[in-house]
Structure formats: C-alpha cells, structure tokens
Amino acid sequence: MKSINDSHHNGIHKIASNVFVEFSQFALQYNAVNLGQGFPSFKTPEFLKKAAIEAINADFNQYSRPGGHPMLVQAISNLYSPLFHRDLNPMTEIVTFNGAQGGITAILSTLLNRGDKLAIFEPYFDSYVSISTMLGLETVGIPFETAVPFDQLKTSGEFYVDLKKLDRILAQENVKALVLNTPHNPLGKVFTRKELEEIVCVLEKYPEILIISDEVYEFMCYDGRKHERIATISNMFDRTISLFSAGKTFSCTGWRVGYAIAPHHLAQTLIKAQSLITFCVATPLEVAVAKAIDQARDLQYFDKQAKQLQSKRDRLYQALKVSGWHPIFPEGGYFICCNIIKHKMFQKYKDTKIAKSMPKKQYPDYQFALELCKTHKLTTIPLSGFYTNAVSLTETGMIRLAFCKDEATLDAAMNIICQME
Image (cartoon, rainbow, N blue to C red; front, top):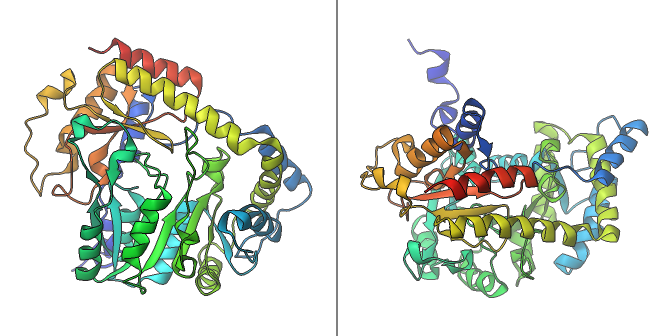
C-alpha cells in the first residue's frame, strides 16, 4: 500500500538537496566565516528602512492588488520606461512577486506545462532546475564555452555561448522556454549587446520559445560596463519576461519583493496566477520600495552601490590571486569563482573519477569546500551544484565566493585565505 509521500508531490522528492542550505548549516555548525550564500551582510539603506516604517505608520497594511501596489508599479514604470525605450504601462505590463524566486515559480508553473523543456545556460542559478523538477518540467543544459583551458581563464567575459550548439539544442529538444541570466550567477559574466544580438538571431528561428531574462544583478555591473536588456532588441519584448529583484538592488533580500516587466498578454496571465498563489506582496514593503526607487535616482544610489561592491570585489579578488586560488575576475554580480585544481588542499581530491550516478556530495569541489569550512572556517559554495549532470561539468575544481559582505567579514575571510598554504 502506498503511503501519502509515495503517491503525492513526486516532483518534490526528485529534487536534490540544496547546496546553499547545506553549506549555510555547515557555516553555523563549524562557526565559519560565510562567503557562501549571496546575501549582503552590510546594512540595508536607511532611506529604505525609513520608507518602510513610514508606510506601516501610514496604514499601508491591507491587501494590495495582485499585480503590485499602484505606487510601486508606477515607480517601476518611471524607472524602466527609458531603459526599455518604450512607455511601460504600469497596470498591464508590470507584475510584482514574493521575491524574484517567487516570480520564477509563478512563470514556470503558469506558462509551461508538465513535461515541457526549459533550456538554461550552465553553470546556472540552481532554483531554475529545482523549481522545474518540482513542477515536472525537464531542464536542458547548455554549457558555456571557453577559448582557453579553465586554469587559464582570467575574466568572466571569456565565457561565451556556442551559437551553433544553441541552435541545435533548440531545434532537437523542442524547447518551450529559455532562461538568460545577466549579470550571471555564478560566473559574473555581463552579456554584451553584440552577444545578445547574436543569441537573438538564433532565437528568431524559434518564435514560439519564451524568453525568461533574469536580471536581478542589473545595477551591479563594474568597470564602466553597461547592463544590456534582451527585451530591447528587435521584436523580443513581445516574447520576453524580464525579472528583477528589489531585494538585490536595495540589499533587503529578506523582504522578498521581486517584479517583472512583460508584454500585456504574458503579464496579465502572471497577475492572474499571483492572485491565486499569494494574492499580493506585502503592501508596506511594496510602498517602501516605490519610495526608494524614486529617491534612489536623486541620491545616485545605483552608481554608489556599484562602486561599493566593485571595491569589495577588487579586495577579495586580489587576496585570492596573490594566494594562488586562481580567481576568475567577474564583470558583475555578487560572486567570484575560483579554479582550485592546483590548490594544495585540492590535490587529495583531484583524481576522483566522477560517475553519472555519484552523489554530488562526493564530488571533488564539494569535498574541498566542506574541508575548507570544517577545518579552516571559511564557507564557500562548490560549483558542481550549478550543473545539470556530470557530463556538463566543465571543471571539477571550482568554488564560488560571495563578496557582498561587510568589511569585517571580508577581512576575516581574506585573513584565512592568505594564511592557507
């Protein structure tokens, strides 16, 4: 006789253990400095916190509309209309979610059907695959290519999409949707306009494919790089959902305020879905984010934040480089990836042969990261958790470190890095 667990929610049982949950627990268990999970440990901006307090005191405490509070969607329209080169209708082309991850769940559960295929460039943000598995979707990985061996990579810009491979996979796999993430998590790659235009040239052959453009790190492009938006190219707006995160933009990830910009026919479907999932996002937080967006431009907040994070990136990168961790210089985002195959501590794991059926906890990078946390009190994330399978894994010795941390945390981490042989 089948138990309840056997007969219901089969998708959830197929999901592998969450590497972020595991290493967050390790960080607590071993009292380690945590550069694992990508949340800021520095303070949320005072003007945002003040706006939230004011919103609560002004009694913005009841249900909002499912598509987003009118103040927030108007603020989003004001900010993004110039960036999208079109007048965005705040009530019909914008929808808010309980975090960008809530947005991913709503998008995939509403616009795709069980058995449909979702194409993702890998390595990838793991929630794409976990949510797809829960919903009964199939993910198709498209690994990034490099012109040089991994141990010779210098910057995240050296990763590129093989357009012929992309074309072949889209044609053969009957893909229903494609996820594009820029700036990229975990690599830190910022797609150039030219790269996006080349991808669009391929996508124009497949007009039925939905594009999900994950742009939560949009304001975190460094060294003068410009964030480019695939929805602004050719006729892509009509088939693209562009996803954003107030939590990332304003360093308030616990607020769970995300939003998307999409054409009317897609946005209205998502608004209907949101009304059935959580109905709305927390009203006072939406109002606070609306006020913060309006104030951010006057305060030059976006530029200041990018400069602050760039400085943190540079400090951590330099420490990793001089200590022989072979960091790959990121162009944007929160993270630095390191190729640690030549690291002394990795040598005991380097000859491990990865089999298709092998649990990822036995992978070399996982074992390295676990020892690093347990013995040296530094938490990172093994990159093998960002690939669909062992065949796609381009390098067995890669870890990810988050630099979106306060100065004391970065100092403690760099001290550990520099003291290791």
